[in-house]
Image 1: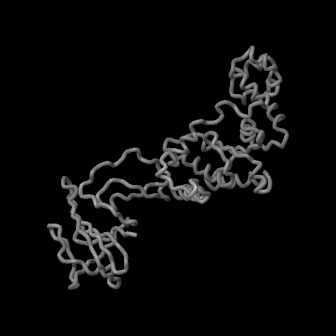
Image 2: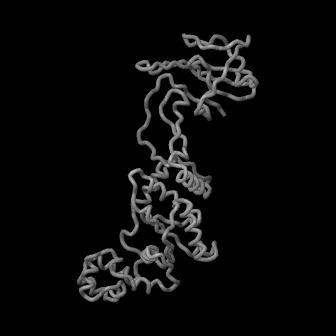
Length: 359
């Protein structure tokens, strides 16, 4: 029977309405998997990993326990309960008691437990009436006698008490792994970038753990990721959402007439930069009321001392939005500069604005 380390974190045992408990659980699972790739989720608040391999790497069980404690402190800021024993049933009991059962002593530890640890009050009550008060006393009953007096489930518990089974039925949450995959986005293979051989690297796990620590210390909005939404211009479609937010199941299938088509700029600016466009006579290039340029642009001015020559332009593409409320008139213009840069401009409120940069 494998010698297992069980990690119990009370604050992650109860699921929160906003889903933060599950996100914290996943972040901690990723961090623990860096220490031991064979870390498994058991239930909310509970993790298990084989201790033999990590002990050889870290130099003993105590070193593994300290590494696990530090990881839990870094990710969730809490002191965990740790337990080591043979099999999941006994190692969870050891974790709740905060003890490390010595090698070869698991059977003695299991037999000394009260009958309540088997999770059946009716079984414990009946056994007490028979003068049986510990798991060991129940284990000493003949299997045939247990089958005569109790139901099938009790016979399974008897096998656990005897050490023939290493865990209780239902001790693991069968749905938890699927929920974690869904939260990670693994159900959609197009949403997750994986390694050359299809694996997630340790660097990905460390990055997730680091992002979680930053968010925990600075707030939910401290770490954001890019997401696409509906809109006509790239600056409308690119938005930032808090890391770990659940993906919306709604799809934006609106036609968005007047939408600027591909290619889209690789970088869109959260705060557009005011610039000037000049023609060959060094006069400002303006947008007319009919959607035409006053002249072909030849120079882009980022500031008084930063000038870029324009070698090609496309557009403009005017659009009128929100006619039913505060009307918004604007036009997009693409430029290629002599330096090789390609940019996206918007004419709005009688000004030119830099809103995107192409690769």
